[in-house]
Length: 148
Image (cartoon, rainbow, N blue to C red; front, side, top):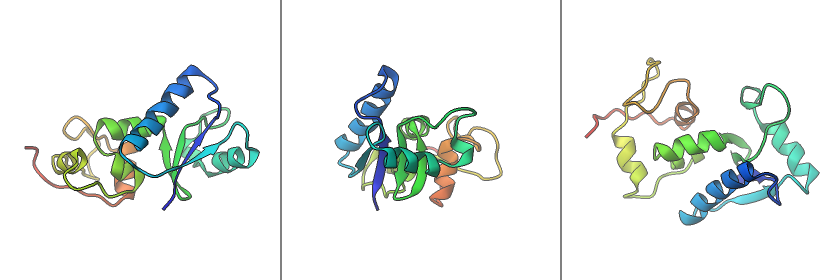
C-alpha cells in the first residue's frame, strides 16, 4: 500500500498549515509510512487529487482543499475525517491499516458497537452518516462488544 497525502508546499495558510502539521505529526509519531504529494508546485499532483476526490466529498463550490488522504488510489478523506477518526482512536481503520497489537485503537474498537441499522450515535461517538462510520464500513469492520 502507499499512503498518499496531498499537501500544498510551502504551506498556503495558517489553517491549512496546522492541519497539515497535525496529520504529518501523527503519522510520523506512529511510524506510519506515507508519501507526500506537493500540489502547490506540481500541477500533475493537483490534477490527480482533484480528479480522485469523490463527488460527495467535494465542496459545493471551488476545488477540494488539502490535506487529502488516499491509500494507494482509494480516497480516505479530508482533515475533518482524519481528525474524527483520531478522536475516536480509529485512525488505523480510517487509513485501511491494521492497528498494532496493544494499541489504544484495539481497546477502543472493542468498546464500540457499529450498527448499519442505527442512525443515532453509538456510545455517543459514531453516527451512521459520519465519515468515520463510512470508513469503518468500507474497511468491513463490524464490532459487536459491550463497552467496558
